[in-house]
Amino acid sequence: MKNLSISSHSSFLLRYFGMSVFAALLFCAKPVYAENEQLTKLMLTNNCLACHQIDKRKYGPQFYEVAEKYQGDSSALEKLAAKIKVGGTGVWGEDIMPPQPHVSDANAKIMAELIMALKPAK
View (cartoon, helix red, strand yellow):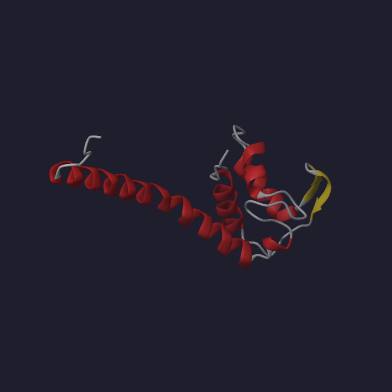
């Protein structure tokens, strides 16, 4: 049986390559986490968690479903921001989205942007 040893130079290169890939993944993942953190903070502040979650269905649709449904719709941001403020029904069956007039126009737009930026893992 052959002795499969790795030279110290090869070992260094493997470790360097592995750490480089790990660091690159961390830097790529950070903005997504930051966006989800901002969305979660806005959801908490505006009581959205009473009916919605980012990745699980509660009373209303999960935000990944919302992002998928409106993908490719150029007017999605305006529609979602308006839906947050004035509510509605019929888009997700019989569920009613009550009006949320306490949400500022700016926060409604930011939430719509963050929801549309979600990319569910498939």
